[in-house]
Image 1 (cartoon, one colour):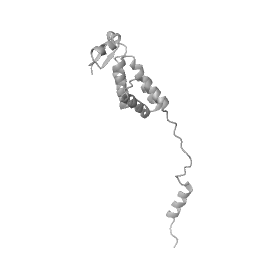
Image 2 (cartoon, one colour; image 1 turned 90 degrees about the vertical axis):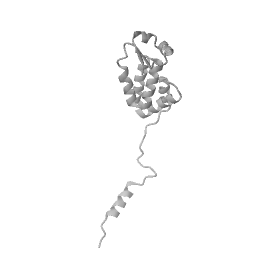
Image 3 (cartoon, rainbow, N blue to C red; image 1 turned 120 degrees about the horizontal axis):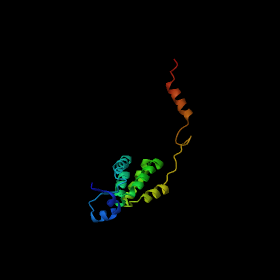
Image 4 (cartoon, rainbow, N blue to C red; image 1 turned 135 degrees about the horizontal axis):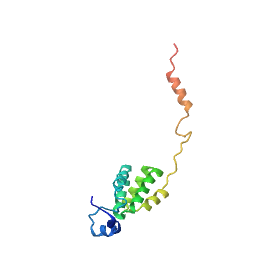
Length: 141
């Protein structure tokens, strides 16, 4: 990984990336010390979340830090699995954008799971109770 840090890097971030494609990360003086922990946290949260975070930072520079923090907050709101799936879709279609993930999560919301008291495929509880009593009853001599 090649990183360029400092105030000039912050000002000329996009130009540095355009001129030197080997550069992975360009950071300003205010955020470079937090970046490794933030990217590591994104990777620990989910593999696709980590990959999208790296791509966001590589393409957008310092403004992506807030977007990465937003991805991590989505994991709390929507659950890690859903956010990781949304990030996988973003990576697949090459939509390296925080807004894409937000819209995907909002539009593909899953209704909360609800439990039904009685289901037609499940027998009534008293039938199981009677069966157990019948099978465990000692035979009368």
